[in-house]
Length: 152
Image 1 (cartoon, rainbow, N blue to C red):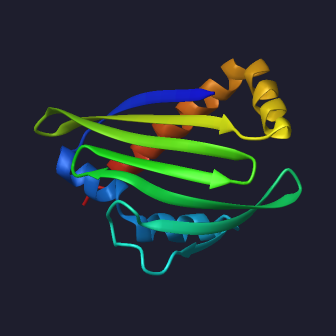
Image 2 (image 1 turned 45 degrees about the vertical axis):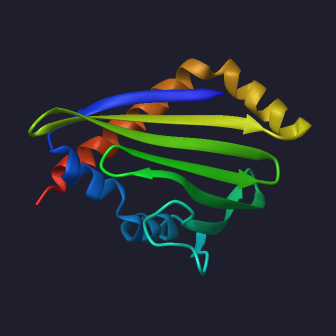
């Protein structure tokens, strides 16, 4: 299942990439939401191979996942791969300069179920696809807005 949304941000491409690749800030935000997140020791800093192990509650059960940067092309592209026992998620942030002070941020997420229960979960998500697409679009829009407003 694939979700995709692009937003135009009033910020130059280099500054926007610096913000979306500020992993320390994202680590703090994720931990505040109740997720246990730990950077994997020995992985490179802000480069392909950087990884985190996470533990979180989802649908009443404790889940674990490993998130890894699979592509880091500053200031254009960031790709992540998250793998848990039942599902894999590929996540991509693609930045394209539209002008000196405006950048298009395209965010894509692809869910790939690896078990029968995960396939059933993804299939049930497809039934509510329009609602999920709206929610995904809202989150990307909100993320872009927060990046713009935090511009210093």
